[in-house]
Length: 366
Image (cartoon, rainbow, N blue to C red; front, side, top):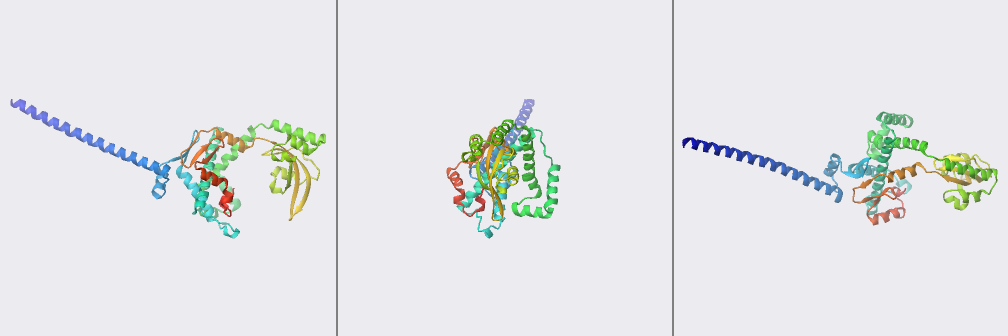
């Protein structure tokens, strides 16, 4: 009996140890579960605050920098974060507010109701540009184009040596945009290099033989067969000027594409040019008249214009091929126009009438 009693006591002690151990495990699990629930609730609150309620403030700004909340998802090209959109929009706002427009009778005020809408339009433009830059970089890398930091640094140094000094550049970037020189490299220089290199590849890939053949035919008809130029323009030319027999009206040097301008201002009245190629297409131009006005030379041209698919046209088609999701509630992705648009019809209407609604505000100018 004594042995049995000792065994019983041993069993009781073992049972108690097991009970306390089990309770301890339960407490640990409970603590982890509570912590996980707290984290989940906090994240849900932050997500609602960022996307639905659009909270602002230092804590939210800090959180958005730590947690890469996506503003836009671009399949195969990555994401654009909420923090990046806000930072770039703030830079645009800073630029306009740092300028002294009063000397030219203009003003910028983003604090009014209309001003807030204009700033929202600027934000939309920022998002569209960021999407374009992301896709350009993706398309370039697919074609084996890489832009390293050494190339970016070299281009910046070359620009500094040509146009000023590093101190002035750093000062201007900080004052106008709130940027460091590294921001300038990554936000401006790098995207421009990718765009230039991709355009070079596109120009080598694009087939313009059909358009060139049509332009050569137009030149032969006008010069060799001496057919009526205006009639040929109506029949063969692309663009709005075809309706007027190719009449472009009076133009200054700056109003014409450089390739056409260079030729037109060296021609004699009545002369017809050879086929001229520009980034827009092929041109055959006839100099109808020339004059000087306010110390500036002007020419009146007719043209037969054969359009080619430009890099911008090609890029827009490529952008349409990407799957894009906009997560910000004020916007949606319009695949037809390949651009971000406002969800609010009132903002869309305001944007359509922007120049009328914002007379005297340079931030409204295209």
